[in-house]
Length: 296
Image (tube, rainbow, N blue to C red; front, side, top):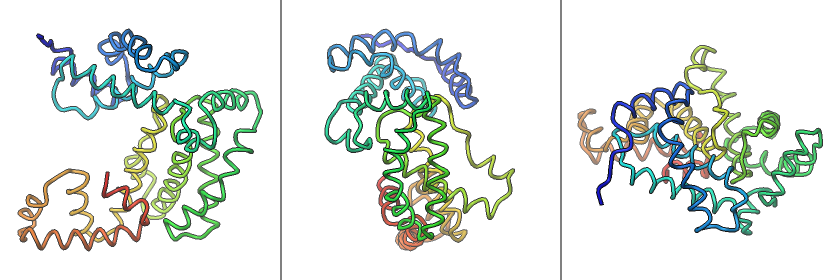
């Protein structure tokens, strides 16, 4: 089968540039058409029970495709695009199915119950906040306090700050069903690291470090991005040698052999140094987030 190129290198560069500037016209023009047409077909074959969620699931797939394009370095073929899209559809659908695990991750709510609660919240009914989120506040505070070694009062303040933002984002349809508990905790703990960072850097530096929330960004994608930001800021707190080594290895994805050569050290020596640096990092972000980071 002959596979045609769907996006030229020139078009991809334009799309990536526009996406990074929060502009979507080129993406919508080139990408969304064929996928929007295909998603209902896939959905009816793979997950007929979710056929009423076609529009919502299509949005989720397009968001994931969009964010995937941002990371690409070369044009991809039509076949590759649809393979990625159908994999993303599976992720979206499996997160929407009313399984016991999904319900547990979402404060005991099914996707439909969550939608109904959000609509009520928009009308002034605070049950979603008072009976769901506030019920998990103490647990969130305990996790933050344990992972960061901060006081319970600071953990509480960060959790409340995150909850106030989440409430606003819920009414603006910025938060989607997926893993709401993890999202709540991650936003709260990220509040702590942003709070700590503000003590050490200027407002100008902050605006360069943190992106504004993308109103179209999926909640699990935001969790992913905030987690990376949290770790980046923690790495900066290490000594210069450790900060440089871990940044190159984890964020710039350089091989340890290459880093050793640049540092004019032996490979075993740099590996030992990296191990010591990781232990220092663990003290900043806690055991749970450290394990998530090194397995990322």
